[in-house]
Length: 288
Figure 1 (tube, rainbow, N blue to C red):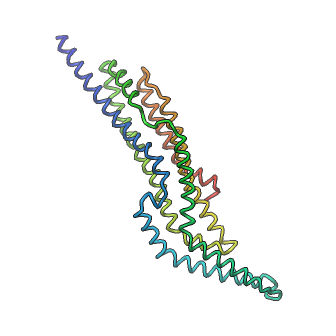
Figure 2 (cartoon, rainbow, N blue to C red):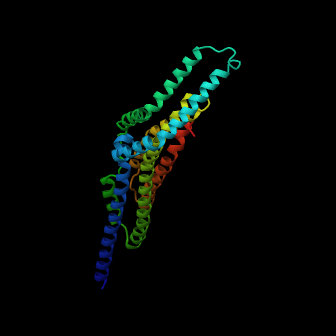
Figure 3 (cartoon, helix red, strand yellow):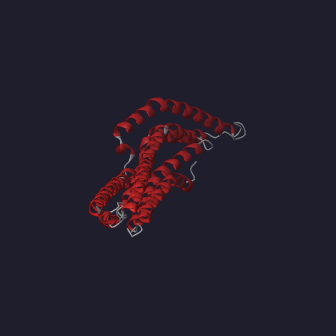
C-alpha cells in the first residue's frame, strides 16, 4: 500500500515540477524578449521604425497642418513688420535698414518651416547615435539564464509535495504578473514612438512661431520636447543596463520563493523607472 502511495506521490511531484518549470520558462521568455528588444526599438529613428506610418504622418502634416502654419507665419511676419516700424517713435526715426532686418528674419522663418522635417529628423539622428553608442557599452545579458533555470529545477525537484503545490500556485500568480509587466514594457517603448509621430505631425505650427521674439517660446519649447523624447531613449537604455546587472546578481537559493519574487521585484522596478524616463528627460531639458 505504501508503495502505491509513494508512486502516486512521486507522480504528483513530477507533474508539479514539470508544471512549475513550464510556467517559469514561458514567464521568463516573454519578459526576456520584451527587455531584449528595447535597445533595438529605442535606437531606431522614426523614419526607420515604421516607414509607412512616417509617410502617413508626413503627408498629413504637409496637407493639413502646413496651411495653418502658413497663416500663422504670415500673421507673425506682418505683426513683426508693424512692430519694427512703430517702435522708433511711430515712424519719426525710421531707418531703411529695418526693412532689411525684417526681410532677413522672414527669410530665416520661412527656411525653418520649409526644413522642419530635416531639423526634426536631425534631432532623432543625434539621439539615435547616442543610444547606439550606449548600447555597445551594456554587456550584461538581460535574460534569466538557462543555468539559473537548471539550478531552479534541481531545487524544485528536491521539495516535498505540499511545498510544491504552494509553489505551483505562486508561479501561476508570478506568470500573470510578469505577462502584465511585459505588456507594460511594450506599451512604454512603442508609446514613446507614437508620441514622437504625434509631435512630428504638428511640427509646422511651432516652427512658424520663430519669426517673433515673444511667440518663439512655443517653437523653443517644441524643440526642447523633441530633444527630451530623443534622449528618453538613452535613459530607457540606461534603465535596461541597470536591470541587466541586477537580474544577473539573483541567485537561486534554497529559498526559491524569495528568489522568484526578487526577479519579479527587479522587473517591477524596471517598469517603474521606464515610466519615469519621460518626465525626467523633459525636466532635464526644461520642456513642458
